[in-house]
Amino acid sequence: MDAIDREIVNLLQHDASRSTREIAEIVGLSATPCWRRIQNLEKRGILVGQVALVDPRSVNLALTALVQIRTSEHNAAWTKRFLETIEMFDEIVEAYRTSGETDYMLKVLVPDMDAYDSFYLRLIERIDLYDVRTTFAMEEMKRTTSVTLDYVT
Image 1 (spheres, rainbow, N blue to C red):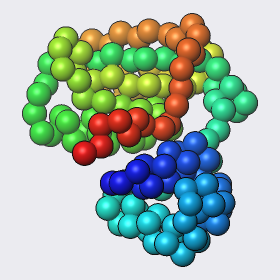
Image 2 (cartoon, one colour):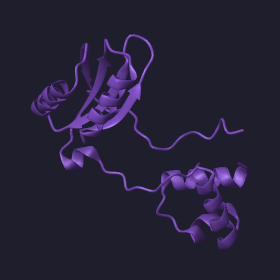
Image 3 (cartoon, rainbow, N blue to C red):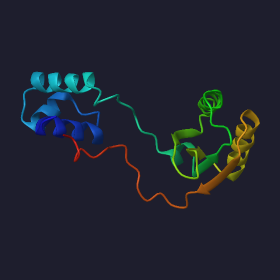
Image 4 (spheres, one colour):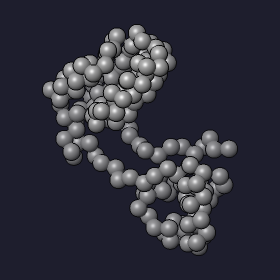
């Protein structure tokens, strides 16, 4: 990825609604070569989609819960059931398999504590978990969807 590709990616990360012509003007290209570069970035899997971002608070999702899960089962069948289970919950917006004491980490968005309790009861009804610990975010200090391009080789 050269400097122009990086600039195109950065522009799109911050505002994907920009037209190809606008991006081209900013990076110093005509529209067709700029469009070709964008297409190439998509083909290479660097650009993977365009979405509209929703402010969770504006849709009554004011409580962010970071859920740490431990399991006593470490086998393919349980993992498959766990993946199927978390897909059932729209409240789960991010999920990670982690190292250390916690096996999985979930980011859950809900309106309030009652809604979290309902989510928790539905979760443990569907899958056996050894331990669940939840931390509630008091303040969002940073949220971004853009990634640094400083490490591109």
